[in-house]
Structure formats: C-alpha cells, structure tokens
Image (cartoon, rainbow, N blue to C red):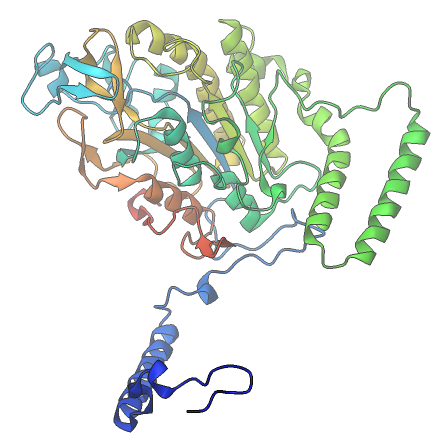
Amino acid sequence: MKPHAHGPALAPAQFGPRLLDRRDFLRTAGGLAGSVALLRLLAGDNLLASTAGSVRPQIDSDQPYALRAPHFEPKAKQVLVIFCVGAVSHVDTFDYKPDLFKYDGQKPPGIPAVTFEGPTGNIAKPRWEFKPRGQSGKMVSELLPNVAALADDMCFIHSLTSSTSAHPQGENFLNTGFTLEGFPSLGAWVTYALGTANQQLPAFVAINDPRGKPRSGKNNWGSGFLPAAYQGTDFSAARPLANLGRPARISAEADRRAKHLLEAFNAEHARKFPGDTDLAGRIASYELAGRMQMSIPDVTDLKSEPAHVHQLYGTDTGTDLKKDYAKNCILARRLLEQGVRVVQLFNGSDAQANGISNWDSHANIESTHAMQAEIFDQPTAALLADMKQRGMLKDTLVVRCTEFGRMPFLQANGTGRDHNPDSFTCWLMGAGVKAGTSFGASDNFGFKAAQDASTLYDFNATILHLLGLDHERLTYYNNGIERRLTNVHGHVLKQMIA
C-alpha cells in the first residue's frame, strides 16, 4: 500500500479485521439495537441513574440565594443542626444497656485488647442513673434531665456507624459525607438546592461554641467545590459579624453615594461580561453583605428578648461558658424565625485539654461529661421547648448529632471511655419526624450496631428527604464526577419519618 501524501497509510489490520466482517457487524449492531431498546424501557420506568435525573437546581447567577423548589413536597422547610463536638457517650446518655450494670468491672469475651487510644479496661456501668421519660417511657440518663423531658418529641437512632474513629475525619464525614477535606457541607448542599426565603440574611449560619471552632474548622460549614456563595456564615452571640458598621469618619451621605457608584460599576462590568457567573456571584455576595449591615444588628440584639426568655435559656446563671452558649441558643432561634434556611449550632470546640473544651472524655468522664452537660442541657432544652411553643417545629427539622460514640468499657486508665465508631446515638425532632420512637439498636453492651445498622450516608439522606430533596438526584459536576452529599451510598431511613 502506497504512503498517503500527508503520512503513512492506515491498513485495515491496524483496526482489526473484525470491523470488516459482515457477520460480526450485524451481530454487534443487533446487540446495540437491543441495548438501546432496554435503555428506553428503563428510562421510561425511571430506573436509570443518569445525569438527566440528577436535577441540578436552575440557579440565576445574579440571584444565587433566590428561593428554589425542592424535588418533592417537603416535610421541613428549615433545619437546625445541633452538633456536640468530641463524641458524646451514648451509653451514658440515650442508649440504656442493663448488661453494663450486670457486667460492671468485668471483661467479657469479645472485648478488644486495644482500641483507638490504647489498651482497654473493664466494662463500666453508666455514670448516671437512667429513668423512663414521658408517655413513651424512653430511658434517658440524669446527665441531661432537661433534654430528657422532651423525649416524647424525639426520634432516636441507636444504630449509627461511622467509617472513622478520628475526630477531624469524623466531623468531615458527618457534615460532608467524606473523611477528606474539600467537600461541601450539608448546609451548603441544602442552600445550593433550595436558596432562602430571607434575602436580607445569610441562607446558612454556623454558630460556633464560645470556646472556639471545632477540630475540622470551616470544613463543617464550607462550600467545598460548590460556589462560594453557599458556604456558611460564621458568627455567634459573643462574636457578631465584624466590619458591618460605617466608620465614624465617613458620613451617611458619602457612604450612600459610594454604594450607588459601586452598584453602577458592577452593573456596567456585568454587562460587558454577561457569561461570567463567578462575577455575578461575587456581586450578589457583596450586595448581601450590604443588606446585612441593616439586618444582622437587629437579629443579634438579644437585649430585646424579655427577661423570662433569658431566664428560660439560662443566660444569667451558671458558668460563663453556659451563659454564652445559652445566648447562642437564643440567636439560633431568632435566625430561624427570620427564615434562615440552615442553622448549625456547635456545642464544644477543638480539644485544648482532655474533655475540657468538648465531649472527648478519655479520662475523668464523670467530671468532664458533667461539665459539658452543665453547659448544654438547660439552654438546649429551652431552645427546643421555646421553638415548640412558638409553633416553629411544624416547619423546622432539628438534628442533634455527634461524630461517633464512646466505648462501653473504660480505657486502661480506669476513668475514661475511648472512641466508638461502630455504634452511637443521634436523634431528630420536629417537622416530619416520628416522635416518641426509637429506631435501630446496638448490642447488649452498646458496643456494635446489632439491629438496622445505619451509616451516616443514610442519616444525611434522611435529612435531605425531610427537606424535600432526593439525595441521589442532588448533584454537582466536579472533576469528571457527578458528586453528591452521600457519595454513591445511602438509603432514607423511612422508619424515622412520620
């Protein structure tokens, strides 16, 4: 064969002789026709997991926070996530295990010799008495008596599992669906999907503990690869947003003229580059910041709350940490009342000392868990009761969670409990939740999930479902992959839904 004028000729053998085989061509074509027909049938029955079913929200880049419709009728319109940092001991709070009393001080077969932080000790009974609560008779310990009084409004899941026993990765996994950094948080996914009703306030607010940020920091409320507009805005009652006020040296008239001039420049630039969605998003963020100059001071002014509300939450009693956390609880309620889509309330911060800054009680669990409970119990119970009496739980889902649990046996030091990713307890409350019930179960010691073992993928899928979102269809294309909060996993826990 002669060479081509522009290079060597390509012989049929280079592609394979079967491409020129008539019988093979007909057989392949027939198979393809059958495949096409099958795909059409599957698509007609909605059985295909394709990008066509991924339902990415249609977002106007000029209005990234505009209200958007859910996939289906939601049971909840807002969500409050109460995150207890450091891993609360489920066997000392919400997961009652009589066998821990029976085998207290013993080391039954099957207990590992070593766990996350080293050698294990003996089985240890709960450090606080358990009592039946309300009409449901749910057994909750005296560590959290005020929260326990609301057990009839809660749906507990006792069979959650995590894929990690390290705090930073555990926080990431709970809040973003991945142990690695760089993925969007639950709040970012929700606001990306739904927007917000109040255009004067952020769609997503993260209220940090008075002691500081959690171990994984901004990952817990970050936007990851989603547009930056959907990250959480971080402030608290004790640390309001900075730089909102007009400097004293600038008059109100000069400030007004400067804003109008900036708006004109932005509009002109946007006209020159109509396809620049990043620019439109930045402009929208700056405009929201301008509106927040008026809205944030009002919503964070807790002095406007009557004295009986401060007394209910406990802003004037107990330790300074408890008082400040109580103020954060009032702030959370006020933000939800103003239509903020997602509020994430943190109880506990990065560990500065064992069990002092959060629930990570590797030693002296009786004193360290008691310290955290004194901060958490009254303000949290007041927040929930206050929301209930105001009718807010009809539209608001409350999620109380922690990154994993703690072991039913003590560590070798004889005073603390190690990390337990194989079984722990979280609970839901409010809109769409089957109140006064429990789902799943751990084994007789609270060591491993034994009945209806569930993952955090399932937990997050259920939260999205209650907000009217199908976790399999809420996606964002990033680096060649249709990403989602639940990765490629997750099932809705329908037993928790009313």
